[in-house]
Amino acid sequence: MKTLLIIFMILFVVVSIASMGDGKNKSKTPVKDPYVERVILEDKVKDLVRSALKDPDSAKFGNITYTKGVICGNVNSKNSFGGYGGMREFMVTKDRLTFNDGGAEFRKAWNAKCAG
Image (cartoon, rainbow, N blue to C red; front, side):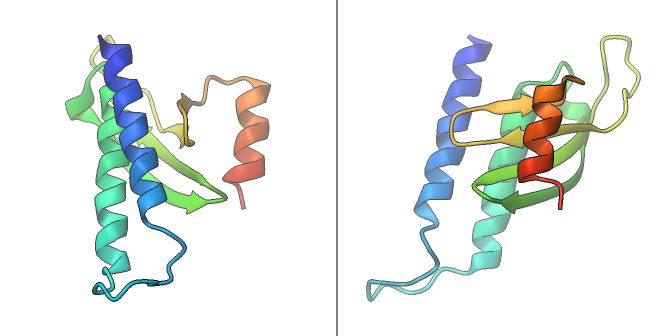
């Protein structure tokens, strides 16, 4: 059930990113405030990340950036022992949420898309 919720939240974030468009207003509808759009997207990303944590209410977010079709950020939350484990990097792409697991594959993707 938790996996289904995470998949739904990822799709919701992806649709939100896609709906932001290329920044050009091609219709006669009023231009949306980009700051408001960013705040809404950031809230959705935080909800997605929280849904994957052991203690969602303890989440403390660091910097969140949007580059190269990827949302990158840091989060600190309580572990199974009730203590904070330190900031942990995460990436949200169009089809997945990935946390830094200490592996070379994540580090390579982070350096290519988030570091900069």
